[in-house]
Amino acid sequence: MKKLFRNDAFQFLSLSAGVTLLIYAADVIKGMIVARTVYITLFDVLDIIVAVSIFIGLFQVWVKPATIVK
Amino acid sequence: MRAGLIYVIIAFGLLAASFLKEKERTQEAIRATIKILYTILPVLIFVFVLMGVIQAYVSRETIAAILGEQTGVLGILYAELVGSVALFLPPAVFPFGGYLHDNGAAYGPIAGFVFTAILIGMTTLPLEFKLLGKRFTMARNILTFIIAFFLAAFMGVVLG
Image 1 (cartoon, rainbow over the protein chains, first blue to last red):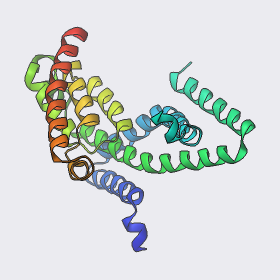
Image 2 (cartoon, one colour):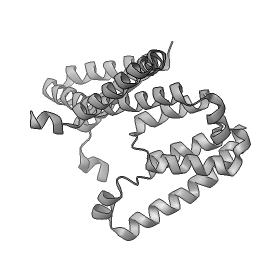
Image 3 (cartoon, chains in turn cyan, brown):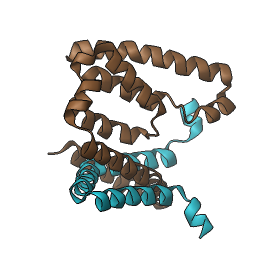
Image 4 (cartoon, chains in turn purple, red):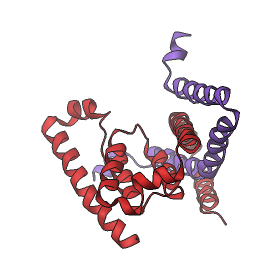
């Protein structure tokens, strides 16, 4: 459990959910604006993020440091 | 066709080619990809939440007043300062920059923000000190801030 709380991904996701829910509790419309912004922006850039991650993954295994140094 | 879709097609095409050439290396590449996504996505989501909070609580007029066309040099300086301390990974900088632009920020301040968010790391200073030394770190960050200012101002003039 301690390991989970120290995990960066868990911290960022918890913070994101916490902030969104807090705002939603204070003002439903503003909470929906926050959620909508996250949804739209995430799905707008997700394809490029996945593609770039694949490029980097392939680069890491196919291009060795020695080649870069050369 | 969306640019993102083209990138995805190319990425999966390369992955397929890699798989045909060497299965084990491709599996290693997929594991590396998952690790990268695991690192990036939570931070990105958090940045998008921040964007949503700004969208909900800060009016377009306020953003334009601080970072708009008429703010000139000050707008660029404000944007650079925000970029310097922002805890943004590079993939998050551009969506945030796009959001600022859609909400009234001018190109000069956006360029200043992007340059400093990517190139300057106030929060990573201790690590940079440790790995590259104090002199290099101070010189790099200060020079970057100054050069970024002139580049951003030039971009503001060129892009209007």
